[in-house]
Amino acid sequence: MTTIYIPGDSSALSLGADAVCRAISREAAARRLEVRIVRNGSRGAYWLEPMVEVATAQGRVAYGPLSPADVPSLFDAGWLEGGAHRLRLGVTEQIGWFANQQRLTFERVGVIDPVSVADYVAHGGYQGLRRALSMEPAAVVECITRAGLRGRGGAAFPTGIKWKTVLEQPAGQKYVTCNADEGDSGTFSDRMLMEGDPLSLIEGMTIAGIAVGATQGYIYLRAEYPHAWRTLTQAIAAAYAADYLGRDIMGSGRRFELEIRVGAGAYICGEETSMLESLEGRRGEVRVRPPLPAIKGLFGRPTIVNNVITLGTVPLILREGAEFYAGFGMGRSRGTLPLQLAGNIKRGGLVERAFGLTLRELLYDYGGGSASGRPIRAVQIGGPLGAYVPHSQFDTPVDYEALAGIGAMLGHGGIVVFDDTVDMAHMARYAMHFCALESCGKCTPCRIGSTRGVEILDHIIAGRDPARNLERLEALCELMLQGSLCGLGGMTPFPVQSAVKHFREDFSGRAHH
Image (cartoon, rainbow, N blue to C red):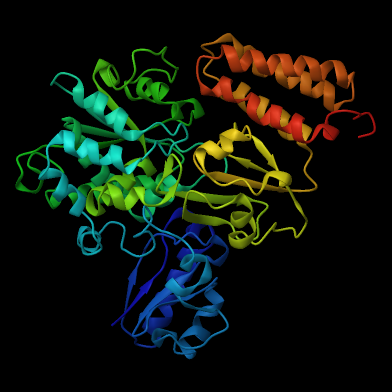
């Protein structure tokens, strides 16, 4: 019986994967051919989706992008044996887009059945947890520290330091929380991991619990991710059934319980203290720090707060060792980052590479340039509050410190591409408007500042005294930077200031627009 892999993640579904799946089932039945269909995660080459893989003697062969109308001709071409067809892409691992990546965190995404514990274990799963259970908690924390893993949610804070702080708190109830409120524009790596390899996140959280003495975990999932919720729910149930979660993990006598909590669509809850407020059943509002969540977090107890990609990378580090992971990357940015290409880009999708490749490589070697075929004028990196980077800076390496050096930030690794038709004054206004909509309202610089920012930008766009209004805008940005309680108000100036700095012609002399 031939196994056929058809992605079931939400992006592939949005491109028609279910209709293709039904067409393949019907055609196989009509021809009395026995096939086994596995709904895997997407490999992340979204311009080729729905991309279907067939297990053949020469390995898995990919065909795509498919539509239901293509299915009869695929069977005619003998695709179950990897036969030639105009949509045949070749052996999946040899397709250039994949062959040139360094997939560590995403090693199993698109390869396995996401909710099968057996499949997960057969591909290296749960070896990290087995190793963690044989070590002292402090040694597990030390391993994460030596690997150089930093928070992949945007702040890039060293994970080992966070864990060590929680470990050092007196015994008692501690928590592990996963921030899966992926709200940044152009980001989808968290969702892809949760839909394509949820057990890596579950194993990572379990290892975190073992490392710091926490017995309860919560995944704070954004409401807009129903497919991720379904996949995670099935994977958690499967992990419990196989004794990888619960009172007696793998017969070790150690305990870890895990639940999902669904947010209500507030961007601010991506900020860790707002997320904790929401988890406790209150309105998502930023807490004043100190105390840090590692000391006084969920319900006032020591709490780990990490992002999906951070926790999903933990099992690999425990399995392969700290030195293996630290061997990738540059400077203080160790390991790999799943980068996401979106916006006006020909080949959008997920690229996992070690830190150090340049933006130019990413945009042209992987992304193939703009979808419109026009020159790329700017990219926004790190979500709606990330800086705009002009093409003159595309040779900057993708690395936390190198990007900070040009006044940008890597954040969650989402890259949104704009061609030369973009109006940067409108993009700056969008950032201020976004902040006004999403502010929790607790501090004045963010609550009032963002509203004033929209008004000032409206004057500039209308050509009313642009020089004077630009001065006011720059003063306002400085105030928001220095005075805001959290990163929402404190980072809203980044896209505005970078747009003014690199694309000043879009702000001054606008009367003719």
